[in-house]
Structures are given as C-alpha cells and as structure tokens.
Amino acid sequence: MAATAEQEQQQFYLLLGNLLSPDNAVRKQAEETYENIPGQSKITFLLQAIRNTAAAEEARQMAAVLLRRLLSSAFEEVYPALSPDDQTSIKSGLLLIIQLETQSSMRKKICDIVAELARNLIDEDGNNQWPEVLKFLFDSVSSQNVGLREAALHIFWNFPGIFGNQQQHYLEVIKRMLVQCMQDQEHPSIKTLSARAAAAFVLANEHNLPLLKHFADLLPGILQAVNDSCYQNDDSVLKSLVEIADSVPKYLRPHLEPTLQLSLKLCADASLSNMQRQLALEVIVTLSETAAAMLRRHTNIVAQAIPQMLAMMVDLEEDEDWANADELEDDDFDSNAVAGESALDRMACGLGGKLVLPMIKEHIMQMLQNRNSGYFSCLHGLKLKSKKDCSHIGYGT
Image 1: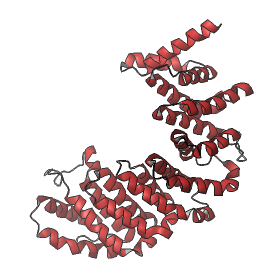
Image 2 (image 1 turned 30 degrees about the vertical axis):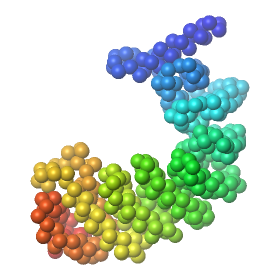
Image 3 (image 1 turned 180 degrees about the horizontal axis):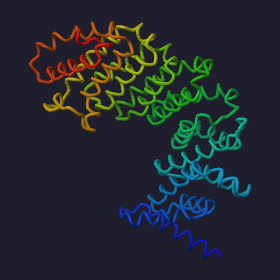
C-alpha cells in the first residue's frame, strides 16, 4: 500500500507540472483529471506536495494555490468529512510548514491557506475553532525570526476577523502588536505589512465607531508607511489608504490634513511612477466623493490639487492624436492625461462647480499663454467637458 500511495503522489506531481504547461491541450487534460480527484484525496496530495521541499518550486506553489482555492470554494463539502485526527493534522501541519519554510513567496502562499482555513473555522457565533492559530500569531509576531513576523502579519492582513468573538478581549494586544511592528525601522517589510494589516483591520470594522476612534492614533504610522513604501517602489499601503478613503473616510478625520498633504506631495513627485502618483491623487478625489463636507474645510488642499490634475492632463507623452481621438484605447486609461481629466471631473461633481471652477479659471490664463501643445490639448479637453458637464462644472460659463 505504501508503494501505491507513493506512486499516486508521484503521478500527482506530474499532474501539477501539466497544470503549468504552456500547451493548452496538455493543461486542459490535466485540469479535467484534477477535477475528477475526490476532495479529500486532493487535500492529502496537495499537502504532501507543499511539504516536499525537494519538489519543484513551481509545483509546490501551484499546490498551495490549489489548496487555498479548494478550502475557499468547497470547504463544506471537503473539510467536515475528514476525521478529527486528519483535521488536527492539517491544522498543525500548516503551521509547522510556515515555521520551516525558507522561501518567502512560498511562505506567503501557505499563510493564505491558513487565513482561508481560519476564516472557515469561525462558527456562526463567532467562536474560533482553531485556537492554536491565535497562539501561533502571538508567538510569531514577537519572534526574532523576521520571516515568522511577516507570516503573522500576512495572516492577520488576509483575515483581520481571525479573533472572532474574542476580538474585544484582544483589542489592546492587537493594537500594541500593530504599533510595535509599524515602528520597526530595521525591517521595511514588517513596517509595510503591519500598516496594511492595520488598514485591513480598520476596513473590516468600518461600522464599529468606538474601535475606529480607539485606533485613530495608528493612522500616522500608516501614513509614514505609505510614504516610505512608495519610495521603495511599493504602492500596496497607498492602495490601502485609497480603500480607507473610499469605505471609512471618517477614520481619516483626526489626521485629515497630514493625509491630504502626503497625498499632494506624492502626486507632485515626478520621480514616482505614474500609477503611484495617480493613486495619491485618488485619495483626495475619492474623499471629494465620500466625504465632501470634510474636504470642503480644506479648500487650500483642493486649490493645490487642481494644478496637479491640470498638469497630468498636459502630460500627453507627446501623443498628438490623444486629444483628437473619438474613443479612448484601453492603454489610455492608465495615462496621466486621462487620470487628470477624470479626477477633475469627479472632484467638481463631488465638491460642486461653484467651489472648483474659480480654482480652475486661475490656471487657464497661464495655460493659454503657454505654447506647449499639451496645454492646448488640455484646454481642448476642458472645452469638450464643458459641453457635456457644464450643469455641474460650468467649464463653459
């Protein structure tokens, strides 16, 4: 029997390889074969593949992705049917693999599995039926091993509801954990992950006003991580800030001025990528839509944002056909010109033309005096917008 099990596992490794094949026919056949394997057998094969450090890295990563998908899409069909011993073995095995794994990318994928399993093991009453995972989080986040600290933060970021109905009990511990990690100056990855985890926790508790107030003093650390990570070519924390502006703008209120100032600074920094600059602008524009009353109290920021949007509209990258095009190509939606035009329109809608129009007019005369073709294209765009949107913007008045 042992030999047969080993042979089956070897065949499964071949199957994983075929699932990665560039040949469509081979890959399709492998997908059909995989789908026909019983769920409980899939778990066994996938876990063994993940454990086997001698296996090809691509095969192990594919196994990790497939196991997470299986737990996500078919948990009720697969996991409860396992024996209690097998369930315990899976849970303890995953935590052990994280501790032994040396490859960062692989460790993250295993953390994704742990987060998915934990998500499914919170019952209807909010009881976490996997208390060992909480102990693992606390032990790992205070470990001297940076990889384990990253793992704990990654799991918490992926599933911030992991504490279930014990969240209130652990609230101070959670806060202290995040604050300490965001203050880690030696390990940028820890600082970035903890800021993302803090943002995810805020987003997961968007309707819990006392919690948002209690965690308000984490925002300066998140903002610092936004700044630092952007200059390390990482926009993940900035994306989290955009999500907060969209879903929980009230969380930003106590530190709105520094949030807006940071967004302006990043938007204006030509050394950053276009995507980062657009995301920074998105924070301000999103707030004009989700928290217009808050933003209207900071007209100085709005006034500084307007020329940034116009400057983006001028940035046509020497594409003379852009302004005269009847339809936008897909690639155009990533351009600064389109981002600037869209931002200006959205901000005018959000804050009202009476506030925004005078600020735009301040800069139009300067643009008219500039012979750069980009400025004429920008003005042409404003003219076109006036015909469509003068009811709320009034460009044409």
